[in-house]
Length: 234
Ligand code: TMP
Ligand code: ASP
Image (tube, rainbow, N blue to C red; front, side, top):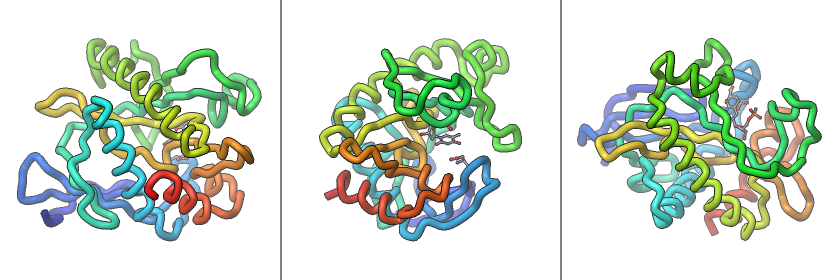
């Protein structure tokens, strides 16, 4: 399957049409942005690592009964996916306090949450992806109540699968962002699951192994992505 026409270019990925109307190619770039693209840079080989890591995780989730848009990994940077209509909501799942949750609540970074926390953000770069609640989402018709109930259930199921998946690889899954899409088969997990959109801490050293290293200039950015790749894909 070959990439035909570019239909969308985001900050980290490009989407292309293919010869099949219900299939797209998701191409992973090395470009990295943070703080709503105020900070821009490159993480060498990130596209290759993220394509491989996301493919592995989607494959794992599929074996556990989670429907995703993943079809197959085509090359180093290309993933064949089912065409979906992306629901414009970023679903953030948290197991411990970090990032904007720490800022918003004053709770200490690393504090474990007594249960899985699901948050909703409206996917709009111009607005800086504001946090919204289920009433906003229903009233502005970004998604229906039934869809949100299904998404929340799926997000929690994904979390119960991914926490031990990362733990066996010596990684604490602190928080992450999911996106879902509508398809003829129902709601599918879409986009990517990579160190770009997850907080991943080494369980032994507590070192950050994700995009926070880029966001906050912590150094060893490429090395950390490489280490995640090693633990997930080898
Ligand atoms: P936050 O603490 O900044 O709200 O981020 C929570 C998680 O969601 C973190 O793992 C990073 C991820 N995330 C994205 O993937 N994209 C985004 O635009 C934001 C703000 C967060
Ligand atoms: N991906 C978002 C951006 O560029 C936010 C982030 O990951 O920090 O800007």
